[in-house]
Image 1: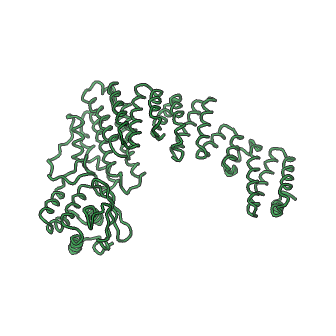
Image 2: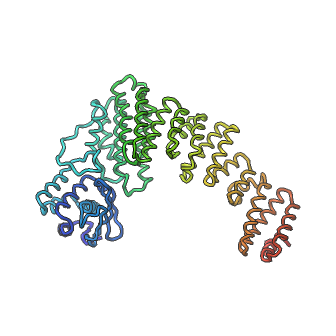
Image 3: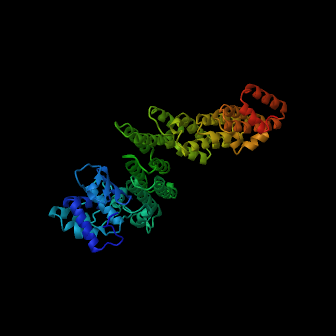
Length: 547
């Protein structure tokens, strides 16, 4: 990128870089930028081309910077400050660290001594290593005072104390995603390894994992890593949480007030972490359902939480996605209180709000797994008119239709089969492959052929073609009649050759259907109808269709 950027930084290299920065950045700006960098608020940083480094900096708003190391004055920031700014400075420090420079030593040596006293104090504060409050890590600078030693989490004191300690132990994360889980284990999970109380140990780990989910969300939400890479990481946290929850002695919780308070505290924390702010990478709704289903809450607690979620969903000016998440969370509490039918009635009260079907796929998965077909049918039927929102949703729509298929396999009745086929028709053309496969399973070859005609799909390209040809060749005749007519209307040699290929397939089908006279009638009618198309006749002769 620049003559200053080295694999090994000599003292001369560092002096040149310091001189370049001081020529571009004012001393207070250097100090402010280092404070932002030190608090972990440079969220994305990646090189582009030979001379440019792009970074996203969280400073109240997200600011996008483009640093030009070939000529720093050409650098830009979305904050639109005149000249250089603190966001550019923060981005430069991140780049230097990525290039192997010891940034802390560099700032001590070159970034502080040459600045004003006030700038020196600001930079010194950022060098002190003060952790940023986890609740403010994305919005504030580094703390001004070095904190006291953090107290190690221990049994007792309440779940709120644990979360305050988590914020001190691991306020921000600046490493790569590949080291995140090890960091969480070292700073949070390992503290309970020697606790003799297994119940309390599991509860501690669940609270720590909830905090880790929020930290991952805050760290990677705007990162340069791929969505699916981050989703894989967060899903590992969720799986670990679910395993801890499954291992909890539910009956034992009811006779231990200390453990019960920690367990019910999970519901409080999830509501604060997952339903209070912006969009999230974490499947908080799934975790909410998991906890409220498996932890023994009092009926009155469920009722209060439902009312609170419902009230929160009606806040004016609320983000649409957050609104539907709160509605779905409240609906789950209705499921626990009054069953699935009551929840569906509750959801109908929000009919004016578009709710993505995938928010309710947890019920499809659960009822399929436990083979509770009547409850599965309730949700499938309720979702059916709403699937228009998810027609282009790829695997989501496929999953919904697969659940219909499993329902019919588990509860084979004419009514269920009819409902399944109607749902698949609703989803056409997206559902073509699955619908065709189901029709083959049902040996409904006529409808299979009609489906290909309706969507103008070539049946002979299907893996099921040979089976249909052997079992019911007559149903394929209209398909090839249609394709032959379509090719003839192309009115060129290439399309005529394709038409002849279709005719030869028709001849084969008529022969299998034991209707040779119909084939002769068809070719005669074809020649008469297109008597002026000499080129077509020539291709038919070449193809052996006529003599």
